[in-house]
Length: 259
Ligand code: COA
Image (cartoon, rainbow, N blue to C red; front, top):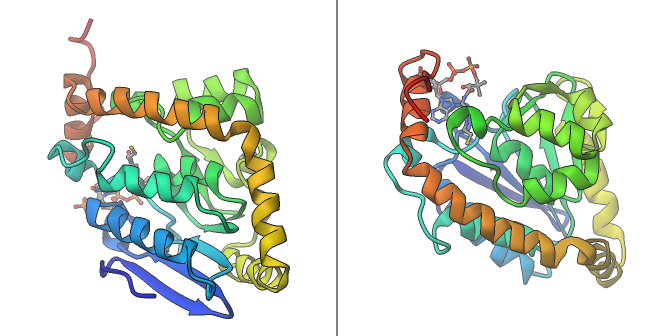
């Protein structure tokens, strides 16, 4: 199974597809081409009997720093046909188990996509953050719907309104990840679980995944669509322009002039 993008790498072994985000010089920030490649891979893997489990991972010490802010400033994410949404839909509806192996930063979509994986393993140096408000944006990918349900309103508000960084143990405590392992160990652990799942009855696995998700699927999709509309508007806002420009200029954002 071949990726159409050099920064998304693949490997299939024992009916397990590994998708590796590989752009370490930009902390694995995700461009439109990378989203498109991951969407195509997931859509192909969904119907391929040669793939029973997917592992999603980053490079050594970095999962992903989230959306490429330069891409977003350039206005390249728009509409439901955009690669970002194609990827979100592909993962949201993916019928087989997906395991995330996380090391280092998992920022923005790097955290929220974990809510849509079936198992997530984090290394003890992993750092999570959903800095959408800090960037003049809003939650994405169903997180405003899912986070209060998995961790309660108070914690979800803390993580989304303050946009605070949190560590791997906190991510495990609030049910964003399953397990914390030593630095360098997440992919190995994910491979062990993937090999185990790949031996199991595939139809029973798909059915169990479907049943586990059906309570949230419909309302989760509504939230994703509503958030997406707001997110697109926010990307054109002066608040986002200030935040993204400040990041590029390596200075704190200044929102003092906004109402
Ligand atoms: N988009 C575009 N470029 C990014 C990026 C992103 N999301 N994340 C990192 N980069 C770039 C940096 O600008 C830097 O470029 P430079 O070498 O030209 O200065 C390079 O990648 C290395 O990043 P740096 O910030 O120096 O690494 P770090 O180890 O100090 O910090 C992060 C890592 C992930 C904590 C930090 O880069 C970060 O907060 N990134 C932005 C995360 C974000 O807001 N994502 C968007 C969510 S919607």
